[in-house]
Amino acid sequence: MIIAFAVAPVVLVTLLIGLRGVAAMRTTSDFLVASRRVSPLLNSAAVSGEYLSAASFLGVAGLVVKDGIGALWYPVGFTAGYIAMLVLVAAPMRRSGALTVPDFAEARLASPVLRRTTAAVILVIGGLYLVPQFRTAGLVLAAVSNSPYWVGVVIAGTGVAVTLALGGMRAATYVQAFQFVLKLVLFIVPAIWLLIQVGPQVRDEAVHPVEFTEFDRDTRVDFRVGTTLTFHEPTTVRIGQSIGQSSQVRAGEWDVPEGTTVTFPRGEPVPEVSGEARPGGEGWERPLLDLQDAGHPLLGTWALVFALALGTMGLPHVIMRFHTSPDGRAARRTAALTVALLSVFYLFPGIYGVLGRVLVPQLYLSGATDIAVVALPAQVDTGWPGDTFTALLTGGAFAAFLATSLGLVLVVSGAISYDLLPGGLGWLRLTVIAVSGVVVLLALQAIRLDAGVLVTWAFTVAASTFCPLLVLGIWWSRLTVAGAMTGVLVGLFASSGAIAGTLWGLPVDGWLAILVAQPAPWSVPLAFATMIVVSLRGRPPSWSRTAMLRLHLNEDRATTPADRLRALRDENVT
Image (cartoon, rainbow, N blue to C red; front, side, top):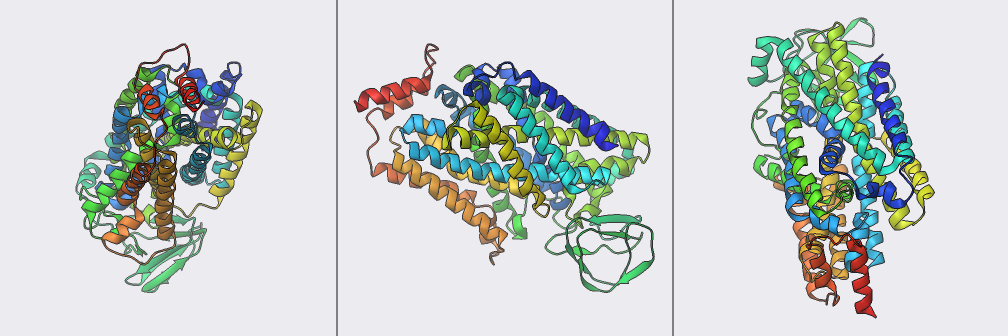
């Protein structure tokens, strides 16, 4: 039922808009940057639609349920990145005339090797960002319709592949702008309804949280992945889909198998999840984020905001979006409008988060806090109003998955078929389908991974690689090929190595655990320093200062800036 009334219309409209772009798509430029004719208002709506991913629509509220008020620093970092982009990157990147980040790297430094290296980095960032989109699509659809996890993953992958293969960036632009408006309406209206419907007692509990230590009603928990629970006293439970017979779990640890359904009767004590604090406990209200429970919340908060703000400036699918603007001034206006649109949306995740802590705190037991937003209406109203708002939020969530995935699949496909293995329009379309298929396969194996963590890591890699490359490439004339190449590789291996250490459970604690789990505070300065030191030991090309200056001058619309940069370079070489 949910699939028919919530997901199907979103996917169908996405495909119909994709058909709209077919007639206007004849060249690679049409496919990748919509012929550079997108107005600032439409573009800012499309950027916002693309940027508001599963991590924004569902993940922030889920993190508030699990980690507390400090999780609201995620929207701060997400939005702050566009201010940095507005000041440092948006207009010069558009004036470069490049189609992709690797295209800019080659136009600025005349290095095909650097172009291929940056294209490989895009694959890493795209993978980290795309997998949680499809994963969360599977989880949400499974939660609201009892369908298998793979159904939502496949629906999301198919919708993205078909839309992009038909209409490219032009179709993606209209889809993302439409889906931003859809997400905004489908996020705000249910939030207002929930606040009215829950009543004054729940609203009071939401702003005066207490630790979740006892079940206040019979509570069913579906463990889609295996989980280890710790019981401090014998606890009565019912195992299985039906009411069944009660049994008692002894004090100690219980390894709950994957696919198990457990019902905890009213009044029973809440067990603990290994490595997780109960919602509403000590420190939950603190406006800081204690990463890794390391006991250094201020450092953890700064590390996160640093990664998100600088990572936004280096996200390749966001950068590509500015290349669709007619000129540099339009690109800057797009960035400014995007800040305003995102600020409106991010007023509301906190509402879902604090209500989720009161109404669905049990989701932390199964690691499913990502679905708190879509689980709330049914807790408030079991009749048709609850079903209706569940369907609306599910449709909005799918709009979030599709809008973000469209941009990511497009930029990854462009890196493969335009930068690594150059081909024509037909090759681009085939690459889109292949990339979507690979991501679907990866997402099917990623059910255990946290969407918010994966997306944050994507920001970290982008901050450690593309942020230094773009800032120095735009604002420092002495950047050399060797410096740029070395800095990108150092940033990539430093951030990726720290992420791998976190996944493998590197035995560190305290402030060191924070800097391993979130390496941006040291990996970004390391990449900047490497680029600067290596560049100072060499000599930039004779044309580099003039080439850089052209990034900051008003456009001559007779030719593209990239063409002029290459022509100037060729003249000096000969």
